[in-house]
Image 1: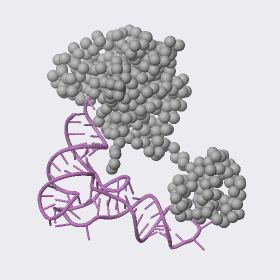
Image 2 (image 1 turned 90 degrees about the horizontal axis):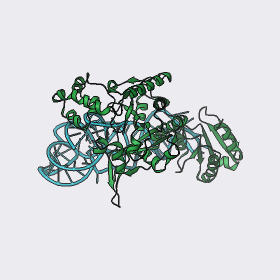
Image 3 (image 1 turned 90 degrees about the vertical axis):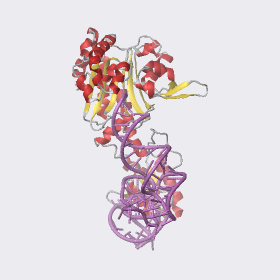
Image 4 (image 1 turned 60 degrees about the vertical axis):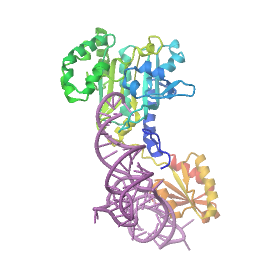
Length: 420
RNA sequence: GUGAGCGUAGCUCAGUUGGCAGAGCCCCUGACUGUGGAUCAGGUGGUCGGGGGUUCAAAUCCCCUCGCUCACCCCA
C-alpha cells in the first residue's frame, strides 16, 4: 500500500456512483418540482461563520469541525453543514434585498472531524433545501412534504416523520422549568447526561441512556410550554400535513443538535440502519439570518445524508438501475481489422449508440465473453471476411441470431434497434 | 476523545503444538483456425498492514505502531 486516503473519506467507484447519481437525480427532480433552485456555495468558509451560525456550544462547533489555517493566517473550516453557507451567500449576494422569499437547494459534500462508523464519514454527502422569507406554517408543511416526497422517490419504505416544536422566545423559560425538574434527579444520571445538564439540557431529552429516559418520562414537554403563537403555528403545520396526506408522529423528544432551530423541528428515520437511523433532519430557523448579520428573515429547511439514504436503499433491496452500460460491443477477428473496427465504433458513438470494443487485442472468445458480461444486446463482428465484402455481422445476444449488413448501413440499422 | 473486534492474492477467506504461503471468485491462454453464458486444463498475481524482539526457523509467540470496522459521545 503506497499512500492511503485520509481517514473517514471514501472513493466512489463507477459502481458506487450508480446509486449516488440516482439519489442526486431524485434530489434535483423533486426539489425542482417544489420550486427550488440549485445553489452552490464554497466547500469551506471562514470559521467564524459556523461558530456564529451553528452555535458555540454545539458539539459540531466545539469538537467536530475540520478547521485549518490558510497561508494568510485566516482560520477556515470545511463546511460541516449546508445552511450557514447558503445564508452567507444570500446575504453577500444581496438576494434578500430583491425579495426575502427564496427557495434554494444544494447537493454536495460536508465535513465533520469525528470517528468514522457505519453511515458516518468525515466527508459525506448531503442534499438539502432552504426556504427563506416565509414565517407562515404553510412553508413548514411544504418543506415537510418535499422531504417526504424525496425519500419516497427513492423507494425507501419504512419511513417515519418525527415532528416537534421547540418554540422560540418562550424557550429560555421552558429550559428553566426543565432544569428545575431534572435537578433533583441529576445524581441518578450518568456522567454524560450530567455534563449535558449545563451545556445543553434540551439534548438530555433524547438521551440514549435508558435510565435517564425513564427519569425524564414525566419531565415538562416542550409542546406544553409553547406560547399561544407557537401552539397555533404547530397546530397549523399538523393540519396542513393531514391535508397533504403525509403521515407523521409528534415526538416531544426531538430537539436537534444545532442552536439555530426555532419552533418546528423534525427528523425522518428508517429501519435497519443501526445507530445511524436518522436519514434526514431539519427545522425552522427564524433567527439565523440575523445571527450572521442579516435582517430578520425567517427560514426553514432540511438536509438528508446521501450515504444513509443509499444504505437504507440497499438494506431494503431497492432496485437500482439494471440497465447495461453499453448497447453494442464490436468484436474484431485478426489484427488488420482493428482500425476498421475503430472507425465503425466511432461512427456508432457519434450516432448516440453506447458502443465499446476490446482495446487489448484479445482472442475472439475473450471478446465475446466480455460482451456477454457487459450484457450488451448486440455484438458487431468485424473479421477479415466481412471487411473484404464491406459488411459486418450483427449478432443478437439474446436469441443468438445473426445477420449480415453492409458496413455503410451499420449505424442506421443499429440506431433503429437500440433507440426504438 | 473512549471501548471492542479485525488486518494473509484485485475480491471473499482458510492456514492445526512455530516447519516449503493456500483455496474459491476475478483476470489471461488453451481444449474449440471466426463467436458468449457450461465444463476442464494451464498461467499471471503476495514486502502475510509496518517496525522491532524471541527462535535453527515466525503469517503463527511478545512489544510498539499504522490502518480498517463496529459501538459510545454526537450526528446526516
